[in-house]
Length: 256
Image (tube, rainbow, N blue to C red; front, side):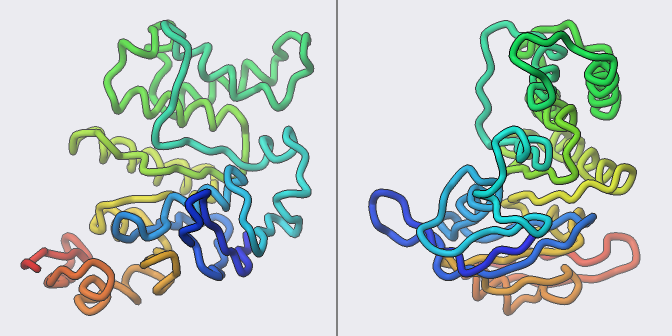
């Protein structure tokens, strides 16, 4: 995926992305970090064709996003938003079956392939035993896994996640992030996600995009770009950057 000269603003005319350029490496996990208002979710929205830029474009597998037909794009790119809405009392299994809509005609029945992909998605996310439960009876982490399962059922090579750990406690945050890592390593999914926690981004990413004021400040491997200078320049927070055999690279906030 190539992001080329993207400029984007909402109706308030405040520029949220300013001439942004970057590439996403296939088969890797790329995480976008930055302070509130830096353009993280906006960039993800443009990358996933949820938002249309005023200038520039996004090229996915050699083709501009706006040239994809709706079903064609849905077979290529899965998106899990920060806030997801489902009908009341929908079961986990029924939600996951929605991921097969890009492969079906309006009145066609589910095929063996559809059922197989749903089974795989439920198994991959550890939700087989929860399949008949209403979504709203699940914990926050389990609900997030259900939405990821729906995207997996789309059977796409790309998966975009907007703050997948938001509003989850520590246990469920790491449960979701470990799932993300497993999907990348076992199935080769290209994953792009937005995270607030820098240490989580370091631990679970091949590449990090650090943003500030609608621009990409730096992009690279965590071990190459994470420094106390970078964190201060972006967040205005003094940190210590540690690197040891047990934990790898991590930051310790010291104050502002």
